[in-house]
Length: 91
Image 1 (cartoon, rainbow, N blue to C red):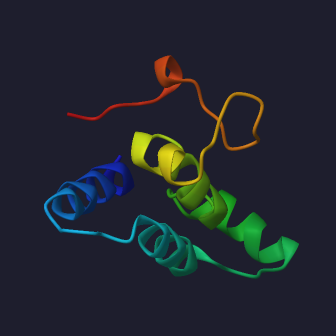
Image 2: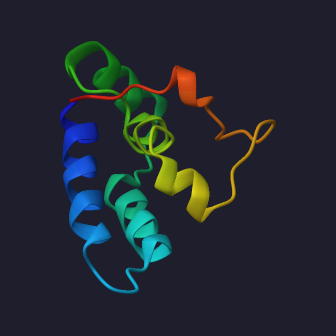
């Protein structure tokens, strides 16, 4: 939930900026969570860290937002598509 709230706050700020580059924003967001790890590392994360794995913190968080789907023209049938009625809206 914290990832979604933080992302929502950043997107709210972006809406007030003229000619905001959403592609750059989403690519940078993904780069922050980009990781390469061994199976042992991922197992350690799954069993000892309360947070989701890094790729989930990126993909699941971003697919909740209309602006992400609009930016990349994601539509039904695409791997990153999540129907609007299935998206989680916090506050």
